[in-house]
Image (cartoon, rainbow, N blue to C red; front, side, top):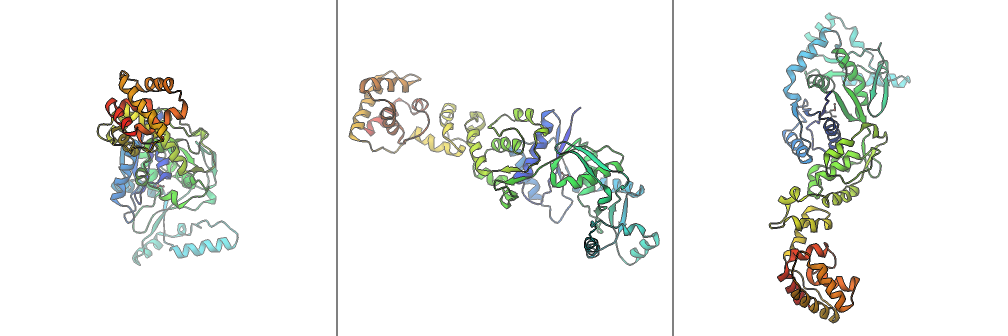
Length: 444
Ligand code: GLU
């Protein structure tokens, strides 16, 4: 049986690492079994939702490779909500209430001062039709609450947290619709999960209590709830819910040279018992994705770790993946020679410049200059094949008795102008015979 997951962001801001992680996990959950991953734009809040954020969400998901198999927008589904809501009105599972937020506040305070849980007292259930008519005549519009079934315990087997149990008697009937007719999050989400055929809801543990309510909403529609799993939230490396984390967006990470593969590899495993590894192949990550490996403790996100992982990922990226990001003329052999020295792809240009020149002329000791002159002669004399470096260093070692650093460093300095860099055996063929001889002569 195939599964359908969904990612349901509200377009009230840019995606940050925390919600991208939720998106990724839903994508992986579906991907692992060839299921469907849907994007649902939760834009019932007209005031706070922005089209530019909807667009940015799509761009960010595409950048990460998390392409949805379908997209729905809540703002285009109000007719559906109206029809489904009417069913709940007919079955008596929603009711009208009129308390202002000040009145509700006061009720809560009174209960708390008596040491009681601040649960809504359902006073509105006692209103008669005549009361409602009088309110309407006075121009007072109702908001709507969902009537919890207090007779039935709420239970579900959470894919991460195990068996969850809630007592509906300890919960307030949630307001699902405001007096102006607009929807709160709770009910449309259930209606959509049913209509979109969502089989698995994986989201942050900040939604656990919503799930308790929503389980009863599924039941009110006569539908089995999807499988639920709630993951521990992401926290900063200092162990707190950091402001930085909540605002660390994809644009900023892209700007910093973070590759999507690095973010995917890291977020896929963070908070699980599996080690974070530099895995480029997302199907390999998906194959091992397993909710039972998720821990209950908050997952720690460390930006420095992401940068380290990014370097390891860059060292593994194939040429075809990066060719359009490289300087003109830089081919596969150059990429493979240079990538082990990169923390970010955009540093490739610097090393390509070392290959193509001009390079800084190094200051060498007199003794080393004699040695480099001998190297120029040797290189001129030897046949230029695919592997000129071992031949050159072999000849020089024998002729001069130099070895190790004394042998290699002056050559590297003369050929590249730098003390460190990519493997010379890979670099020398790229520099080419004429340029290499010229650089050696210039440094000698
Ligand atoms: N729009 C909700 C949120 O951003 C979706 C929650 C859910 O996954 O149902 O938290």
